[in-house]
Amino acid sequence: MSVAVWVVIITAIAGVGGTGLGGIVCACLRKDSDKMVSLFLSFASGVMLSIVCFDLIPEAMFQYDNSRHSGLLISIGGILLGYMIVFLLNNIIDMSANRELNHVDSKHPRTADALDELIHYDHYTEHKKRDSSYDLFVAGTVMAFAIALHNLPEGMVIGASYASHPGENLYSGSGLILAVVIGLHNIPEGMAISVPLVSGGMPRAKAVFITALSGAPTIIGALIGYYMGTISPASLALALSFASGAMLYVVFGELLPESILMWKSKIPAFAVIVGIIVGLIIIFGG
Image 1 (cartoon, helix red, strand yellow):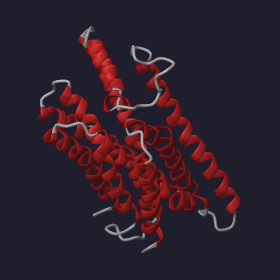
Image 2 (spheres, rainbow, N blue to C red):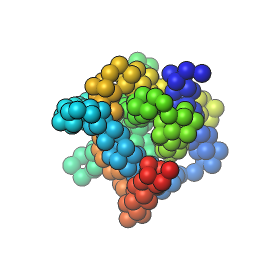
Image 3 (cartoon, rainbow, N blue to C red):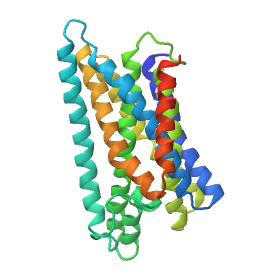
């Protein structure tokens, strides 16, 4: 089996399988799960933060044996580029969704503090009350893009990691570890997607299918990250740093603020620390 095919398979399991499993959990349990989602997001954020900062970024920086300054400059540029692109795209989606919601005002946080706000399902619900099928389609597209923006850089991280270790065992390397971590992280994201869909009256089987499908952009991101990383050391450094920057935005700009607002407690912060420690064990404990 070629590396590219393996990347597609493992990323599909992590992306589609992880979100789908989260959808099944919520469809079966039928209960509010803000605290559970908050803890999962916080823990997974800590693990991903540790792997990005202590594994992927150093790997990007030292692609050049004779010129570490070049690797450093490319890495910094890639991180900033990845962060800014995802930030701008998220900002466009947030502005498009929030400006039509009555509850968004000076006293309400711009980040999510409920499951339906996490994926902009509240935006879709607002249109469902009063608008045509076309407007509902547009609102649903906004929701889909919000989900895709979280999943695309996660896939790039997996693909770029496999590209950075071409001789590594496909079944036990850092790429597989990242896929497992991202798959676990996708379970609460799937829960966050499924809960408002089921609560809004959608049949459970359809809600689980849509939830699983939302993980598909992870596969696209993985292929982009992998093929970028196989072109040259410079492109590998750019792929690793770009994916790292995008993930840093997802962690610091979305997941951590959302997890703390969803459960206003110090426990999510502790879950982040536990995640960072687990990430360190994964990187250096082998």
